[in-house]
Image 1 (cartoon, rainbow, N blue to C red):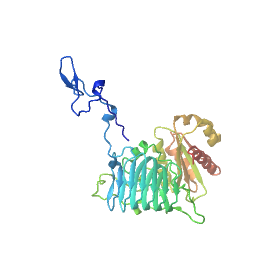
Image 2: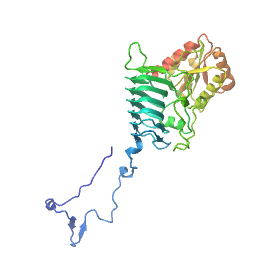
Image 3: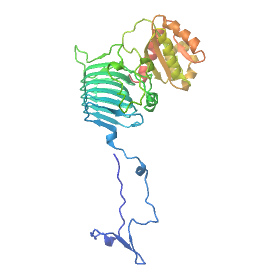
Amino acid sequence: MGCFFSKKSKRKSSEKDDRTPTTTTVETTTSNAVPLGNNSDEAPKQYSWDKREKVDPKDYMLSGLKDVTVGRLPGKLNGQQFVIQECENCNIYVFDHSATITIDDCVNCRIVLGPIKGSVFFRDCKDIKCVVACQQFRTRDCKKMEVFLCCATQPIIESSTGMKFGCFQYFYPELAFHFKDAGLSIFNNNWSNIHDFTPVSGENNWSLLPETSSVLDYIPIPDPESEFKSVRISTEPQRSIVPLTKGGRRKDSEESCLFVFFSGEYTTANARKLIDEATAKGFVLIQTKEVSMRPEDVKRVFQNSAEDLVEWITKGPVIALELNGDEVVGACKNIANEVFSGTKVFVSDNKNTSSQDVDSFFNFADMQMGL
């Protein structure tokens, strides 16, 4: 909301009773009449708010649309709030980062939302298919939604039914920068850890999408003739900015391995390289986390290996991954030696204690993040 300021004219007391709507003048010793505010020798004072670019609320809202393809290109929102309301049978693409987004009273829409620094809130929506990356996700009074989600905190549904969730799978060239601008980590994704505020006894208001689900099965690529034709999009899981994780689905193997990268110049790239190496060998990525640690946290989580690791946590957050599959511990140790020999990492030492490693780290991470 803008603020408006005005400067009151200083009038002589004898002029206060003069109500005549004529140009006010000041008598000078030379009897020359000079109109107030027209002194050409002094430029008008300019304030910082005078220099701000005028914001049109319509640029940050989509309202009352039907049967159209609409949205915003990269660079159009730049971290502002955004509103989508009363849209029907629309394809909506917001290829930018934002502060918060609210979606109200929308029906039968396909929606892609770039990273949201705060919350995304769906209210009174029905038959929605969407891709969303956010700090907080919440729905209220919604029916039948399919969501490919990246959420830094625990997603919440309230008075909502027929909700289905899958892991975020999307790419466009600016997306990695938008995650950074929104303050989101691609490794902190709680997409399958749903909290239902209003559970119904004997019923499930939410479930997980089939593991083989593809974004294209639900949300089309923008029409080549639309304004989004210049945005190079991919929905292939291997190109997704956010790593594809199994989440809360049942694990295929009893054996899991904890692999931790300590902060460095190429930590993110190294973590992605590990995912590529491990999945190429048939192993499955269960979950990931990026968190900061204190010396006492290192001692509690890594125990016997802590002394060698304490100095490394001062350099920044660590990135941890849980990989699953038969013989995964031995395979991860080989990858660490062959691919990351010059990088500081922690890898579970044997399969008898690897599950404890996984539980210790991710329980700590969840507590740190308030999950």
